[in-house]
Amino acid sequence: MKVTNIHPITQTGVTASEHYIDGRPCFSPDGNTVLFERAGKEIPRQEFWTVDINTKTENI
Image 1 (cartoon, rainbow, N blue to C red):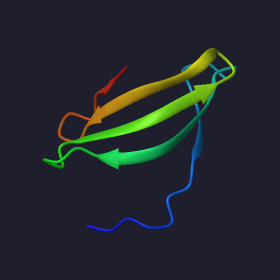
Image 2 (cartoon, one colour; image 1 turned 135 degrees about the vertical axis):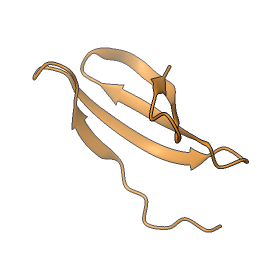
Image 3 (tube, helix red, strand yellow; image 1 turned 120 degrees about the horizontal axis):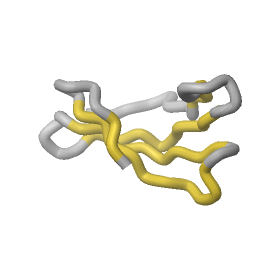
């Protein structure tokens, strides 16, 4: 699978002051999990997050 034209997205967290930039998404080999970087005002250093495709659950 070749993925092209991936751009970071900006999203708002639970409160209006939480702004995140998510980027560099990639799928796990089994295709069930997405790994991405998250940075933002409330995050002092970039973090790696995952999202389970089936449950749509985010984890740090």
